[in-house]
Length: 35
Picture (tube, rainbow, N blue to C red):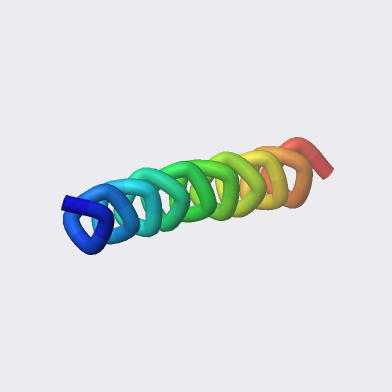
């Protein structure tokens, strides 16, 4: 049970990190396009 919980937490964390990276990349692309 603990192992499953750890896997779920790691999955959620990786998804959140990926979302932040995507937002950052989109922001950079928008800034570069605007300039």
